[in-house]
Each structure stands twice: as structure tokens, then as C-alpha cells.
Image (cartoon, rainbow, N blue to C red):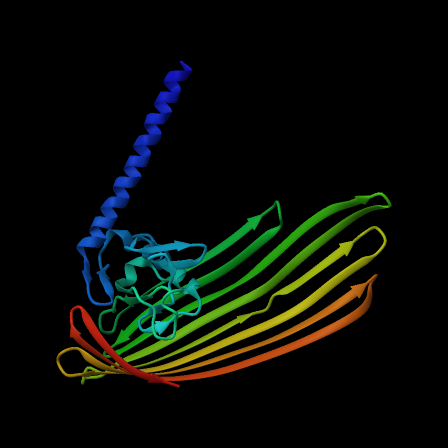
Length: 338
């Protein structure tokens, strides 16, 4: 009787695995039929594809050829992707992909080789996502909320996110927003024993804070075929970590207040040159990162020390490129940057 049950379980497991494998192969086949290759990699048309239904963009990318996603990192042919773009804007926070429904993706271009700014032996290529354009005067978007709580470690977080893509004549507006708070608590205990030592140490670590991120992007399509675009990202976080330790005789604690803000700005101009697909691309990027960290150290409720750290970073980059498609297997790119 037990042998028959085991055989039945094995058959059910095999059928389930076969069904999942068949589903995966069908999805890969659908992707392959929509894919065209060129000198740099391939481009996949995902408009109306079944693999995008009910999935965020971050999950859709994992179904594409030669792309894998694990622990928040995308790899192309086994190497970490050097850059990911959405409508020509480079993402510095990949969590934006969680807010983009897969049905809104028009096509994805995958370039196998890293750009000139990266080591090709250590970094993979780039992933360029193009979103579906709304009809003139139309829009689409999404909104979602999440909340998690684990009683075992008293961990909870909650957040709300949304995105919208709107088009008016030649102007496209894209906005991606997230706001949420986090909370964490962990308790630990350890015993230290020796010939002349016996100590019981307890420690409690806590953290709570607020996170906010918003990216606004504007793109204007000109009648000459040129494109003019701008993008602005602001991201803020304010964690409040603290810890308390007790060894039976002494209580020591650390309390911190951290505030970090990140701002990114991009201006981009693209002008077609001729009928062969030659393009002129001009880009200006700005990055500002500012942080304050105030920490206080206490020993038996008496303040023992205080540390204040402030950092500020400003970066500018200007870039000009001319892209010339010589043939399907060869593309020339000339550029300079400062």
C-alpha cells in the first residue's frame, strides 16, 4: 500500500514538473518568435505577449534569453548587467521595475557588451526597456500597496507605489513614485564561559525609518524626428537604528539618526542624421548625494561619546555620441565625454 502511494506521489510530481517545463518552453518559444538580432545583441517585441500578463517588469526580464535575475541583480550571459534603461533613462534604483506592469512594456533591447565606461570582462551588457506609448491624449498607470509583519522577529514594513505614463501630442510624461516605512527588531543572547569567566550577554537591535522616491521624466518628440528629454529623480531615506547590550553588570547602547538624500538630473537630445539610421546623441547628467549621521554612545545611561558625520557629493557628466550603423553586423560609435 505504501509503495503504491509513493509511486502515485512520484507520478504527480513528475506530471507537475513536466507541465511547468512545457509552460516555460512555450513562453520561451513565444519570445523567440518576436526576437530580432543585430550587431550588438537582440531586440524582443513584448507588446501583447503572454509572458507579460500579471507580472511586474522585474519578473518579465527573467524570461528573456541569456538574462537571469537573482538577489536583486540582473546578469547577461553570466555577467552582471552594467546598465538598465527605461525609455532612455538609466535606473539607479532597480526597485522602480517593481512598479512597472509587464503589459506596459513595448520592447526590450539587450546589448551583450558593456559600454566604454565599464570593463567588458567584469561587466555584462545593458538592458534597454521601451514602454508602450499611450494614444494621443491618453494615459495608463498602476498603483499598489504592500504591508508585511512577522511576529517571530517583530518586523514590519508598509508602502505604497504607483506609476503613470501620459501623452499629449508629441509630449510624453512618465512618473514613478514610492513611499513607505520600515521597522525591524532583533533580540539575541549568548553565554561566554571559561575557567575564570562566565558572562551572559543580551543585545536588542531596532530600526525604523521612512523611504521616499519619485522619478519624473518628460520627452518631447519634434516634427524633425529629433527628441528632447529631461528626467529628475529624488530619493530620501531616514533610518533610526539603535542597539542596547547588557552583560549583567553594564548597559551600553548606541542611538543613531541618519538622513540621506539623492538627486539625479538628466537632459538628453537625439537627432537623426540621414536615412541610414545614423544618430547624434547629446547627454548631460547631474548627481548629488547628501547625508547626515548623528550617533550617540551611552554607558549606564550616561552619554559617553557623540559623533556627527556629514558627506556631500556633486558630479556632472557631459557626453556626445554619433552612432553609425555600417551594416547589420557592424555599428560604429564615435563619442567624447567629460
